[in-house]
Image (cartoon, rainbow, N blue to C red; front, side, top):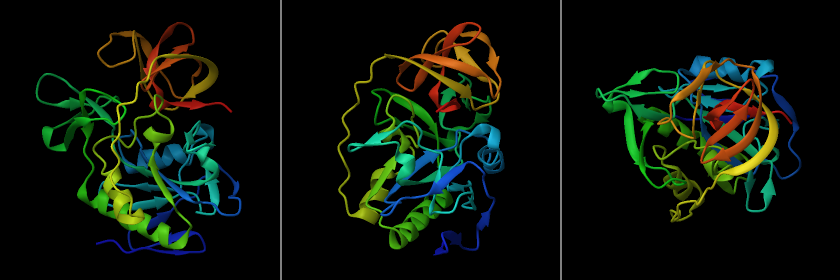
Length: 281
């Protein structure tokens, strides 16, 4: 269904466009990129996510964003470093931006049932049961609800990763949730990550023990990277809101983290999802 080629570090294909992002560093060092990191955008649309990642004020980017119909927007050439992984570690290497190609999938992320048969995203968009995947996240213990990926998205991702593996010395494919456990939950259980690895790298599906992630005390500065970020009394959507939603660009101090949530201090203190914070390095 999808056929891609790579020419001069740009993806070529019928469904591909290029919208350059200023949010990038210089070229990879010799031997890189050798890793692919899969993300979800936790956004409402392909265009809105591309707008976020091409805005210099947001200090975030990825090489590729894939829409619900399989359309692809490239924002950073494959030989340049994009800003998608943040604080991360995998098999002894830290700061995976320096080694990896970042692929973002247009997907709302984790959803919350509203009690009336619909499921709500963090930005209060309602999804029907047909758009919902129910499963256990590899870093969690209980069933939860996630925005399902489309077949076109999955096929486009597999075809893209195949082209990348043929063109670059890729030996590792990981989810953001694996390189930043406790901080990130993407791409989540709805994406067939183990199947992708098995098909392209020949690795057997891993048995993923549930990560024992406890609340950790930290102190660092960050900015909000979402519009209308809810602030809650505890780490989870089951906790009540304790302040007005934070606007994009609001500076906060992260004081504690627990299973994908961060306790932040601004004018008051409350918990927000880590997905919508960008560390100030």
